[in-house]
Each structure stands twice: as structure tokens, then as C-alpha cells.
Length: 317
Image (cartoon, rainbow, N blue to C red):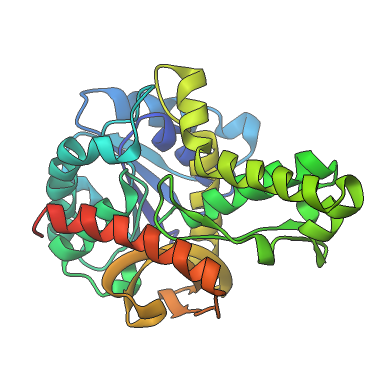
């Protein structure tokens, strides 16, 4: 059986790490694209030359020609500018929206049957542009954000409680911005509510303060990394998060994952991409799972959605 063809649009830090992870897991043959001459060819060759020692069978190629993505089963878009210290994801909107227009047009022309995962920021806007320009069904154009944000939330919880992150479950909804919504009520360690464990450790009042700090750190986790790196943004964790989504699709795992999906009435939202839990399988987004939110959770979610709407509407798509 022929291997899947995976086209990575953008060969920067995320594209390079993602290509390596895909190859090592033998999820398919990988094509790296970038507008910078030589960059995708050099990175793909470098990764390919590890195949003997890493023990994987996968073909890796690089290109500066969009036409080479022809026949791709899946396209991952990470192209665009990365954040610099002091910038929000929203500050990238003008430049990256132009990049996404070009990318989506090429996908529509050369890979009309592909499923698309968008990583570029501001995520909620970029995935919206991609879906509108390609005209693909909503199930086949997905934004990666919730998997990453939830992973960050889980990681911070594990560090605070000194437990294995393997046993922590956490969920973040809403837009991929500073007003994202980590759902405290759903966070647990092997089924034990995180707040219960924090209260046992610190007492009720202190537990609430600690959780508030974990929520704040989750919301600003990307900015924390940007501030430390100074010359770029996160790339290991976004790439690993995309791998989770790709495996769910290629292996038809029916994973319940928080992703940026187009809502058509769910959560009271119509016609906008927002981060919500979905069933992810061979067809992409196969089901949107609608949670019964408390009034407080709903207020935070609505505020986050309002910000997404403002950004999207500002572009007059």
C-alpha cells in the first residue's frame, strides 16, 4: 500500500521538527515547501540522512514550487511570521493573512482532495481564511491550537502537583489567544479533580490562587516562550501537537481532541472557527462535542469568541 503524502507548507522551526517527527513515526512521505530558496531542500535532505540511524522508511523532499504538493493527502500550514517579544498573536494578522491567501489558493489548485491543518497565527483567523479560499468542506480544514493549549495546561498542573503528566487530563476551549478558556472543572489526575488535590495540598483559599496562576500561565504560555527565545516562538510543542492530530486522522482513531473547528450553531456560534472538543478521525472533524458550560465558563467562552469574531470581521472575508 502506498504511503500517505504529507505536504508541509513552511519549512521553519515548526516545519522542520514536524517533518522529523512524521518521518520517525513513519506516518507518510513528506514534502517540505518554503519560498526561501534551498531551505526546504536542505532540511529534507538532512532529515532523510538520519533514516539509517533512526531506523525509518519515509521519503523526504523539499521544494520551492507549490505545484509539487500535487496529490497530497494532508497539508499542514505553518507558513508566516513568528512572534517577537512584546507581540501578541493578533499583531501578525496583516502579514500572515496575505501569506495564507497565497497558500490556500495553491492548496485549492494543487491538492483539492487534501485535509488541511493550520498552525499559523493568529490561528482562528488563518484557518478561517484557508477554509474560505479553498472552499473545502469544514470537516477538512482544521486549526491546531486546543491540543497545544491543553497540553500546556496539563503540564503546568503536573509540575505543580508533582505527578506524572501522563495521568493529567486538561481541556482548553475558545480562541487561541490570551482570553482562551482553560476549564478548571474538567481538569483531573486519573479522574481525581485537580482542585480537590490542590485543596488537600494548600487549603481552599490558597488552592484557588494557585489554580488562577496556572490558568494565567496557560493563557500566556506562548508569550512566555517568545520572551525567553527572543528570536522566535514555540516550535517543539506545536509540532508534537500536530502529530497527535495527524495520527488520529491517518489511523482513524476517533480521538476526542480540542481543535479549532467551524461551528454552525454549536455553543451558540454560527460561522466562526473556535476551539472546541471534537471527534477526529479519517474524515477530519467528524463530530463537534457540545459541553454544558456553567454561567461563568460560558461568559469566558463568549468573551473569547467575541475576540475571534472581531478579528475575523476586521478582514471582511
